Image 1: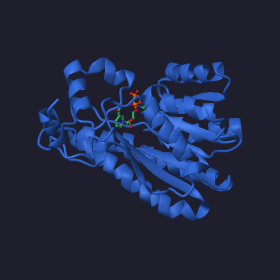
Image 2: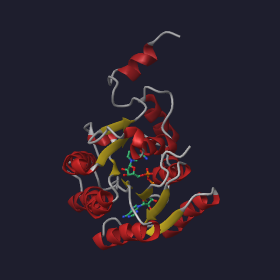
Image 3: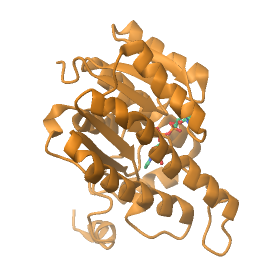
Amino acid sequence: MARLKDKVAVITGAGSGIGRSAAQLMSREGARVVVADHNSPAAEETAALIEAAGGRALPVTVDVTDEGSIADMINAATDEFGALHILCNHVGGTNPRTDLDLLRMDLDEFDRAVTLNVRSTLLGTRHAIPHMIRAGGGSIINTASVAALVGDVLQTSYGAVKAAVVSLTKSIATQYGPQNVRCNAIAPGAVMTPALANNLPTDVIEALKQGNALPYLGTPDDIGHTMVFLASDESRYLTGQLLVVDGGMTMQSSAAPGRRAMLPG
Ligand SMILES: NC(=O)c1ccc[n+]([C@@H]2O[C@H](COP(=O)([O-])OP(=O)(O)OC[C@H]3O[C@@H](n4cnc5c(N)ncnc54)[C@H](O)[C@@H]3O)[C@@H](O)[C@H]2O)c1
């Protein structure tokens, strides 16, 4: 299949996990991919995997907290491939050791979280938009989280910045829709990236699974496939939306897992 034939995609955080999956899946659909990450060897590894499978990929070292670095990344894409149609603002997160409850959270961590999650999304988009308009349109995909939708006892900054990413998504979609630039966000639930799988104790992983309606946790490809859909013309009438890809974690009643355990048989 070639659902992204002739498209050029830039994906931040493509050296690992969900970003790597999105890069590989978009390449498989015919896109030429800029694999951007601040971990240069990881970006090079993803690009090598894509090239070995017959695709075209350019590894780029980027720090999404630095505007000059973001500008260089976008320029590298257009210099190498001549255009830009797809941007995944995927890098994000907070430090769970310092992103605590409101009274104990580190305010410097909050500022870092805004820079890493929100400012990076705003700046990546700002540098990409003129190229997308020149190309006749484009698709921007922002990575939010289910943390944007629910309250939590910890990770106060994480929820707040991911909610800001959702708001930004709607402003971008509203402002550049007339130029045929779409912008959507994805809210992944628990996704077993290598980092998560290696660091979480098995009982925590089991508890996460119990919280889903589906009997399994997500894989990077589950999110990557959704990104391919949002990048492709199959979603051409879809903009400003948040797609929640969480195995049913946030849609079901909080009582459901307990009641399920009480069911006979
Ligand atoms: N994995 C999950 O369960 C989950 C759930 C919800 C949302 N998310 C979101 O997905 C994104 C992370 O993706 P992942 O889970 O594949 O994580 P990951 O840790 O596997 O990959 C993140 C990549 O981002 C790169 N990176 C980190 N800081 C960077 C910077 N300043 N500039 C450039 N690159 C940088 C890292 O080197 C790494 O390769 C985040 O936005 C996170 O909030 C993940």
